[in-house]
Length: 111
Image (cartoon, rainbow, N blue to C red):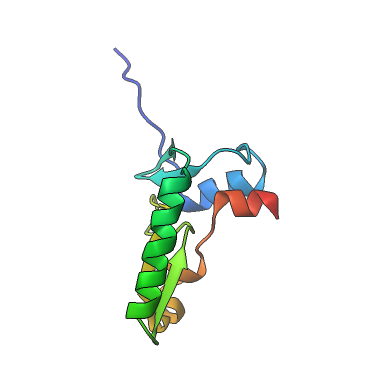
């Protein structure tokens, strides 16, 4: 008996598919453990909460910290989540490729 296997996608493959226009610009997608997941759209209450959190974090963290909102972050071969907000140091930006490679599928399709 032949078993069905899932095919995991890499971050690079996910980015290439996005760049090639495979996904609809209306889709909000994340790559989690190699699976492409469509996540729910955010509504006004969610946006207000993210905006408020961003203001609070910006006030609480100064240099060398960077506050980044809604961008995919590559966390290895098979994971590219899109957290609402991420805090990282400027040093991490220059030594770790994931913040500088941060990409949003919707941004890359609309560019």
